[in-house]
Image 1: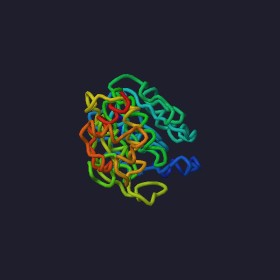
Image 2 (image 1 turned 60 degrees about the vertical axis):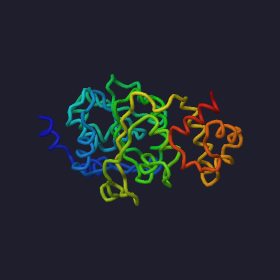
Image 3 (image 1 turned 30 degrees about the horizontal axis):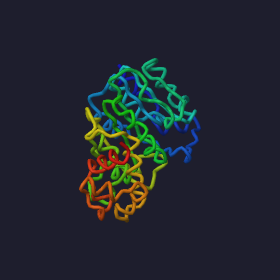
Image 4 (image 1 turned 90 degrees about the vertical axis):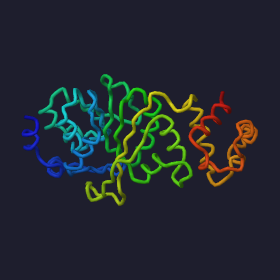
Length: 275
């Protein structure tokens, strides 16, 4: 029933045109219009949780694909007030199953929406995706899975292994708390307007416990300190917290550069610096 009704809906391009939608560069808006790709994203997100959260639904391409999987409830959060108009026909079909929230997702406590198990499936705005992810990592136990689309260079930083040029604060915070992997790339031609970069879909599955017991804020401070001067040795970048003495106590060479340390090494340093 839902599939046949969805087949009668206007295309994403038609929705944009008939509603005279203004695309806001300031909101990092790039709408994916290929339903085969949005279906693929959702299929890769299975099993689908009872509560789904989508950020930046826009004209509802990904929203349609999520609703076809029949979640108990889908919260679609968008800062752009045009979303209510663009999602109107989907709302008429799905009623209370689709809840449209006009709000800035950066400041919205999405971890409190609906009931567990809770899952995020979203094409994140390029200009705010990293900030959103760090906010959600602080409440990661509230989620069962996150399937998120980022600019490829951000995805590379999220999943970067130790020693790589992309390894840094984002890699450490993410992989301290989750198992991360890249699923597939999406070319700019799949979006309206087409960005000049490739996008990558990333899967994050929260671990039952962090790989090391340390406070989030402590690890965040240490990694920010170390990677703000990533070309320098640790004895220099961690100088203001007497890093050389801490490193010696932990039997970590102070002549190493930050990308040479594992996630657990950074956790140990953070625990020692901020007990």
